[in-house]
Image (cartoon, one colour):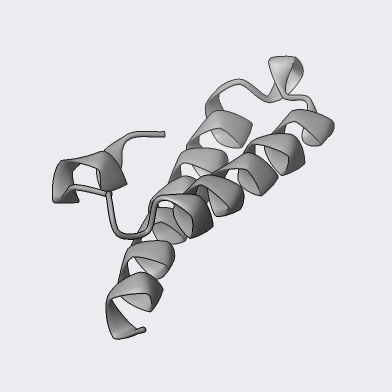
Length: 61
């Protein structure tokens, strides 16, 4: 649905911004494998709870 797509895109966009910030500021502590595990979990949670998400949940990583 349109609502699902909007929430998913919003969360992924925020996540990518967060990803760039972490990689830039904490490069020596950055583990590439962690980012993909978190992204997989994020997509799973969005698919599972797409109708339960409140707007403020979209800003939390």
